[in-house]
Length: 133
Image 1 (cartoon, rainbow, N blue to C red):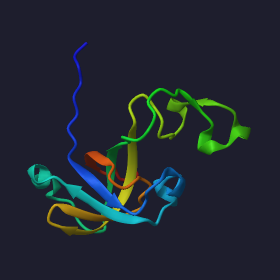
Image 2: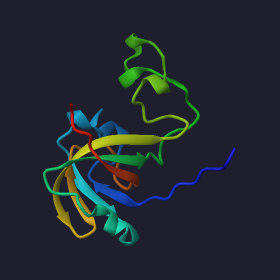
Image 3: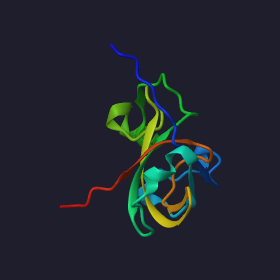
Image 4: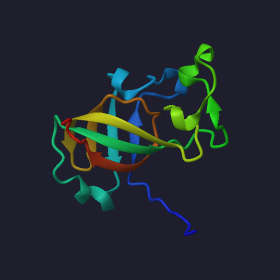
C-alpha cells in the first residue's frame, strides 16, 4: 500500500487552550478565531466570502491515536462506543471537521465563528459547505 502524506495549509489562532474549555461541537459554539493560511496557499482562498459557511478539516495534534472505544460526550451512562460511531477527538487519524462562518477576510487570514478547536491546531483543508437540498 502506498504511504500517505499530508501537508498543513495553515494554523488556527483562538482562545480555546484546553479540551475542557472547548465546546463539544461547532454547532454549539459562538467562539471566534483566526484561520491563518500559509502564504503559499493564499490563492486557494479566492472565492471565499464573508458570511459564507466553510468546512474546515483540522489535524488534532494533541489527541491520542491509540484509543478505539470512548463514552460519547464523556457520558458513561451511554456505554462505550467505537470512535468511528462518535465525534470523539481521539481516533487513529485525528482529523476534525468543523463548519465555520466566515466573518471577515484579511489577506491570508479568515476571521471565523463557531470554533470548537484548540488554539494552534494545524489546518489540513478548507472546503465549500454543500447546501441543503
